[in-house]
Image (cartoon, one colour):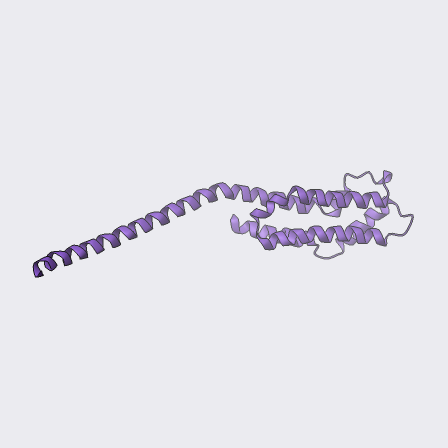
Length: 170
């Protein structure tokens, strides 16, 4: 019996040591594989995220009243038509970029969504304040003036947050 224990105890120690070493080896290999997989996916996702930041910054720039009014022929439109066109443009730009939300943080996406809602509300409120018989040009001037003097606009706030987040990626 003692003879068997003399052989079994060292064998058991060798077995446990081997198991521990192999366990650590496999654990380290798994961590290496996960790290490599993450590195490769980051290599592919980073350019996509950069494009998403670019597209969302374009969204925020394109949905400012000044930018949306540039190409309109205001002489041939009524204030109501301009208002409808601006709201349509904002919603169209926003809907076109909805899929980009998966590449930005929830906080930034919330600011972008808020910017859209606030801009639509702003366009509507200025339209309601216009006196009867106003021209589309009067509406556009009032809209741009009020937008410029409104302090930090929701679009500017969202764009700044977007830039800050993009800097952490780059």
